[in-house]
Length: 338
Image (cartoon, rainbow, N blue to C red):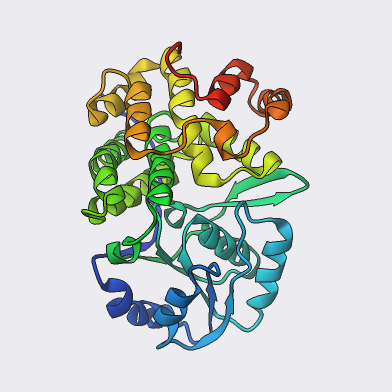
């Protein structure tokens, strides 16, 4: 007999090739957006300005940085002084900056993702100050509308595609064992793993982008319901303390943390292994990372060996887990003796 509690989150999703250009104006108007603050990166600014051209634009904020430093959040809030809606175009950092504004100003967000970050589906916000990344949940930061257009991810460099895709997989994998897991979300998370495993190699090779983006949407939707677990906690600690790049950090750590969880709760992750076509979830994730040429060692993404002890201390203080050995292996990229 099943017994569970599940909170379904509100939000509208528009998915399809070309919808960013054909439907964005209608979606913004439906939310009453007349003075739109566009939030994006310098790299994404030309696309963002093109998409926003038919809208009433109050300003464009391009001071986005990973992990949403407090100073960036404050500057974005100030830039939104005359806005009545936020339009973020780009990856997780653009979405995260929009969330920082929404948390303070209670403005609706319309998100147009151009990577597989998944943040656009969640009510989770993050902010970094004094080397520590704090996160929280608020209904005010959940985007009201998300416009998924696979054509906007065409041309995304293979390295970014691979790392961002592994970040999406982290959402789906963690949704299998996070505190809020339920049978319905488990189905969504498992389908997300399947779609990402099938779609990411095609996306990296520029053969198809739709399946990977669909998988990222499902993964973010599952993660939004279940909340985060050990993997995200570690990634946030390392990202905030040592300014490591967000998606590559997830890509490196995902197989290692999954192996750690799988050792004590193999039944929770059995479906992940099945969806990957692997005997074990962790080995399937590592094999996929290698196939995508995603980063597999912390030392390759900016981590310093002299910070490993401090990192282990921070993780132990936050989670109670002693993971110095795991971090050491992830630093070197050692896998064979796990």
